[in-house]
Amino acid sequence: MSHGPAQNAVTDLVQQHYVFLYRFAYRLCGSSHDAEDLTQQAFLAAQRHHDQIRDAGKVRAWLVAILRNAYRRSFRRQAAGRPLPLDDIPEPALEPPDDQPLDEAQLQAALAELPEEFRSVIVLYYLEQLSYREIAELLEIPIGTVMSRLSRGKAALRRKLALHLESLVLPASPAS
Image 1 (tube, helix red, strand yellow):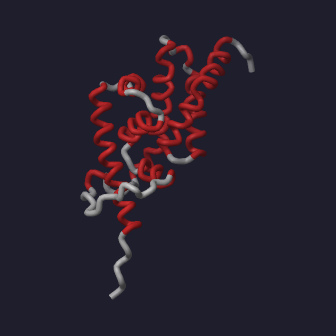
Image 2 (tube, rainbow, N blue to C red; image 1 turned 30 degrees about the vertical axis):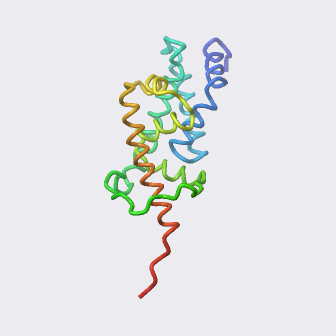
Image 3 (cartoon, rainbow, N blue to C red; image 1 turned 90 degrees about the horizontal axis):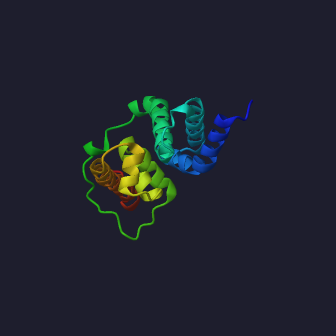
C-alpha cells in the first residue's frame, strides 16, 4: 500500500477526529463494538472520497454526516422492530426524585430509545459540549431546528428516565 498524499490525509483525519467520532458513534448506538464498526466505516468512506473535501474547516461535519448515514443504513432494520414512539407514551404520574443517581447504563438505554435526530443533538450538546451553531454546522441544519430537537429530545429523555425511575421506586403490586 502506498503512503502518498491521500493516505497521509486520511491518517491525519483519523488522528484528529477519531476520538470525537467514536464517542458520537457510541452514543448513537450504545455498543462499543458497533461504535468501532461505524467509526471505521466513516474513515473508510473518507478514504474513498477524500477528493470531495473542499473546505478543511468542514471536515468534521463531513465525517459526522458519513457516520450518521452509516448508522442509519446499519440500524434501519433494528429500528423497525421498536415499540411505540416515546411521544405516544403518557406522562408518568411520579416525578423522578432530584437526588436519585443516574448511572451510565440507564442513560445509554434511554438515549438508545430516542429517535436518531433527537439523540444526535443531545449527544453533541450535552456530552460533546458543542454550541448550537457548531451542531447546526455539523448536522447541516438550521439553529432553530437544533434548538427544537434539543427541547423535544430532552422532554422525551426525561419521560423515559422518569418511567425507568418509577419502575425502580414503586413496589410491585401484591398478588391477589
